[in-house]
Image 1: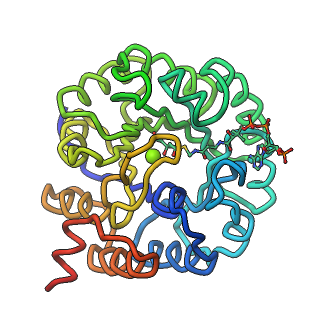
Image 2: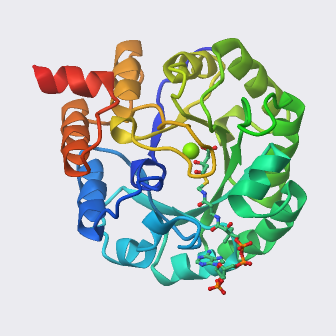
Image 3: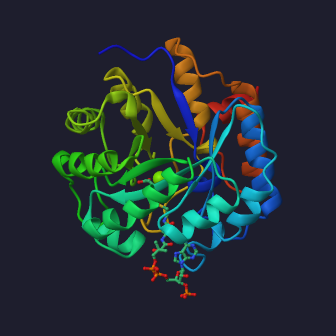
Length: 299
Ligand code: HMG
Ligand code: MG
């Protein structure tokens, strides 16, 4: 396979990037972040998460975020919806796309969404049905595709099985999450090979956390296989509250810099994106984990 000519970035900073922050971040700051990301040319933003505020307090203002978005033309604003309750809330706000999230690991599924993998799939079915009735597309996440914080190694066949179940159920795209960032390029390629036997490469996305500093290398490897949708987070913000020690997603600025160098189109203004990374890390008093962002802001 050759590299894709165009890559779509799914910016998960406002959701994955912020969900684990212990101090409350104001709705105004979240809204400004989303607006700046759209202005930098990001066409898909995961803006909020309709999960239980007891489980993830930082996402408790999901209604206010989704209802007060300064929507920009050409930008899709999406939200996580683990069950019907979440979906109904998101639909009330006029959400354009939602995502359900499962796992290739039983233990992670229990810790993250309080049910087994089979139960989660059964719970997602009515979410997909209702979303389809409402004309809302559904993305499916699979966590722990390159390792689990509780179970360790995860077989590519298990990742393929859960991914296929989500795809067969009607998820138009399956995003493969290296939740704890332990993957390495060869492993990432093998996992993609296994999953793409059942699902077209065009319907798969890579969602790599950078805990072990391997995310860019892993992305390069899977893009070589044809992956053309990449999830990333501005300034490398983030982590999962149910994967202790997991750090943020690969930084959006670093991905855009890599893609620019490969001559792959994104439509994103790197300087504006880097300025957004500098702004949000100052606003929430976090280090900027994008090397490109830090380099550009030092110029
Ligand atoms: P549960 O306790 O089994 O659910 O949680 P329940 O149906 O028994 O409900 C319990 C309470 O939660 C009830 O309230 C419900 O109303 C409420 P109470 O009567 O106790 O006051 N509730 C809700 N409230 C708001 N929105 C909802 C909702 N559903 C129930 N949608 C549940 C099950 C899934 C809700 C819970 O486990 C949960 O919210 N988990 C979310 C965990 C999470 O957000 N994790 C991070 C996102 S996933 C991730 O980061 C990985 C990813 O990035 C990919 C990767 O990196 O691998 C996507
Ligand atoms: Mg994640």
